Image (cartoon, rainbow over the protein chains, first blue to last red):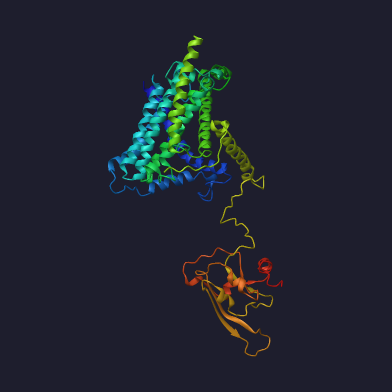
Length: 358
Length: 189
């Protein structure tokens, strides 16, 4: 019992450390540096400690210090309680989503089955959607409570965008659920051990639509109408400063990691390596004993999983720095007139194929 | 009334389905990304001397300005250690910002001395607009626009530059002198 609690705590600390402690700050640096390199610039490299610059990595620390020490400004006429509450409401769901995201398979360590997911819910994927949609309240309330026209417009756009793309996202997932016959993310991951069972081969259209809808949910360019700098000052977080602004920022980056992790699990085989099964790894290191070989397999799988996650983060960043912004009506057209019918057709075709094969 | 702007854009079917164009754009940006990424690494390891990125680290590296650049005006000092200036006052008259003040001195009959020279020549850099009219007006090749553009003071009084701060030898100003001769053609007629 005590061991179970300890293992769960370890997993929680690992996930928190990776998302909040590593990805969220590092991605601010990656965003700047990657955009710079893509545009033939150099990018942030001026922050230094004792003349040591480390390619500008210290900008993360400088950003954090800046956010901590800035004035926490609440505009006149704003609803103080909601204004303070909304960044928290926005950032918590982004972190909580990771509770059901598996980052490895099941391993036999010291005679104990360790499942590399914090809580293996039966309704895993539904939990992700339910919690991730809660973040919308944070964004909408943020715009409403800060007593600013631009913020309110931004939050209204967030709400409409969320409503439009949540439908597509849900319907896209149905295709995946039909193929694998389960909602548990761990089982979906385990079902993709065979390379040709990966979601990208079984649901190619679903992958593109899921990625599009997910980027739209995350409100990044090309779908960044809620925070369009040239139209609304900064959208729903115009009136935020200091760490509250930082929380919105962090929520965006953690959601990026969530999207990358979900795409990896649903469509790119999760922690699986193509043509290399778990048994082959454990049998290769079998001379070290069960625990050691399983531990090696675990480390390899976690590494592979986060490698895939990093690739999809890179992919999202490349999209963000390649495409121009959609107009509002174009976003709505794409959501309701193209993606929604396509996702319905996807469900229909998937069902027909499954029926024909059974 | 709605106004329709005809932009003469006819998209082909291939462009209208949009996904191939997204992929093409991403190919271009990621090609730049990887070329620059792997172009960076040898540069930072000190192996390649030329990098593919031409960003200048400004305070440490300064690009060479072209000769046509108009920085702060300076007075040319010839090889006899005297100013070329004869204090005629043409630049003072030509200056649209009234930033030049000249106090002339004249030869009082001594030998080995020039006819006229400026006793004081002050340019207020806080007022100067770097138009280069003084250079154009000067008949004696005495005042030139140098390539210096970085000068900052804590006090407006310090922005008044006297002869000591304005002087520059003709050797230093060689390129600019050549350039003005070509451009204004003063000495070509």
